[in-house]
Length: 192
Image (cartoon, rainbow, N blue to C red; front, side, top):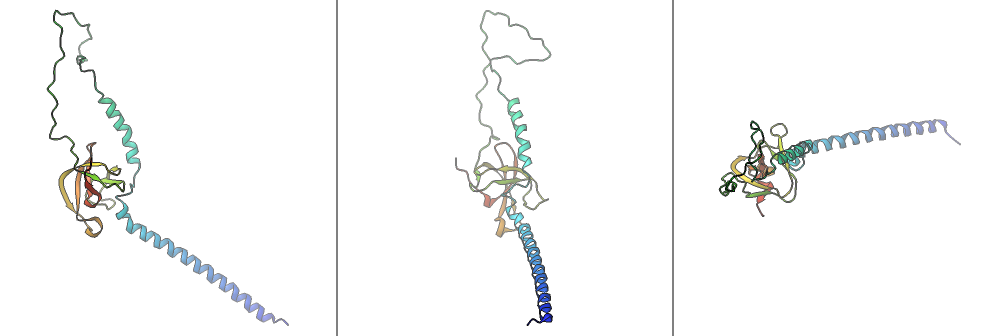
């Protein structure tokens, strides 16, 4: 004995249950995506100093540095300086041999790079134009690999969130002459 009305009611309930399962799955997926977005947005400021947002910055700088180095290639110190206004002439023999001019020995200048800090050995860090990791308030000047030597420029700025960023930002110069800000918690004393 089969009750047709009972079968019809059971099929209707199973369809409703299937629709409710589909709706609950869609809501769960939307909740997960929203939660991930909120967590990512809150961690972006913290992780922004460890992960570069613009990798094309370092890729475009490298060819320029290579041409600068080639342009600064040392010349033969015994060769006379060339003057483009004068035509090249053959040297005339003299009775006394000419000695190349002697330059005074190079002395270290006050502006020579003297590292006293280095980036931590754990992460790649961003050297920033301003003492802030908030997007739009500062730009990434350079991406520094771990243990990059730095020269402290005796300039500090307070952090906006001391519990997350430490007590202060410090201004540094790299060996390449780039200047910018790094959080105090991301550097350590220089170890040659």
